Image (tube, rainbow over all chains, first blue to last red; front, side, top):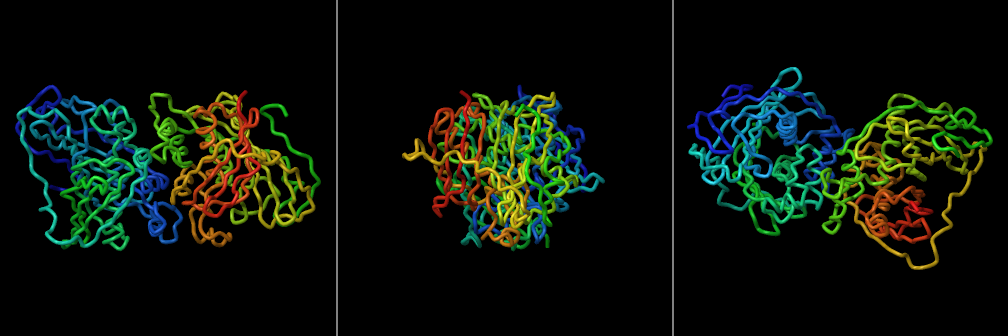
Length: 308
Length: 308
């Protein structure tokens, strides 16, 4: 795949009331610009729990714009403007043809981030997107959207792949799709383990970075979806995990991260404790995150790719 | 005092290297417009600890813009655009003549807020200000700035009085000024007591509402000022206390608040527990807040005025 171009997988067409693969697959979404400030970068960092405990003073550089060691954007911030692009499209009433479902059906299934260049502490950006793949998982469908984010002068900064699980929208006779597996967790004790107790209002804070899906704030909406109460954003969980990894296995050098891939295999309730186990493997760190209180794996098949 | 007009106290002139009363007193600062969004209102609410614990679910309406009971602006939010006006003046290089000191000398001493109308959940505003009083406390000086905030169509919404203590800038031969005292705390057990453990990153979050004084984020700056580490904003402490009062003695009806006055008699370190004692007194609630860990009064001579 050449850098900076959208590519679509070829797959058998199929359709049902929510999805028409023939219409949707490969659809290219219009380019939209956005910008962010140092305040946005700091707000995101607090949203993923930076500097939340007294012993995380080294994380002040993600939050304080005049830090003596240099204010730094967390690598996973790169997912935020991409997701906000998707929300902005929806706000403008722009959607791919052949996709007819609402937020009441969508869960974030997987996320892949290729960080081509580190994100500055403030920038103007432009985003473009395409419907890259649509899979039929039987009961559910999976829609993969690719978002390319460029600087204002056209340099590719990041490629995000957002895999959305569309509940109940499968069974249209489409391809099942590949299994993205990192090969599983090594058969040895983790090289490092890091625990973080999320705040009761962690999701309420994270959502101010842009993902205002009511699933993360509205008790009634969450119950109608089948959850006890609002859940944490998958990308908040991922941001916490990668922050833990940068702190424990990357000498707090976030610029070493060149990519992240993860599956959201379970949901986190705000207030729960996220325990991330990490294994070094060449230029990768394999990891998984569990909720301690329910001994439940919530992030799996997960990898941080490092610069060599 | 007629609503909507700045007034200045007459006082004896005096000067030293930081303050020239004759030049500064009564100086009228230019009108500047600003605006805020529902995101700003929610960010402020989280900054003063709203919905931070599971039993504060009634506070979700301060944080979630689509809340079924109606998204509501906390009354003390009204201090934020006024303080941001003061910062914006500084950013534009506009200052009253005769005042020559920097942030390294300024502490927030007292705050008075008259809430003429409740603040909507988003608005365009215009602000004007004047140097209302300058007092000579011996070692320190006190500079009182009045800020009037109006809606875009010119209706007065709020009058703020910001009293700044200018350390070491007293002794210029000026008036000592009045003692604003609510008459002290009643000689009986408090009618309600509410405790709130601030987050370790409470100040880092609060500052994203606009008050980016390094005293609240920068360990070196705070130490140079004589503090062990960065302190919480006085207005953050006040916002927490009024939120506690609205929850305990105002049936969670923030629109009952028509004014707030408080003295910041001590500083709070993020992570400490704020215990607010409250007494009903006609259409007022008298209160004081202490840091539990150091048994130190940090907010005193404090009153919430209620609508009759």
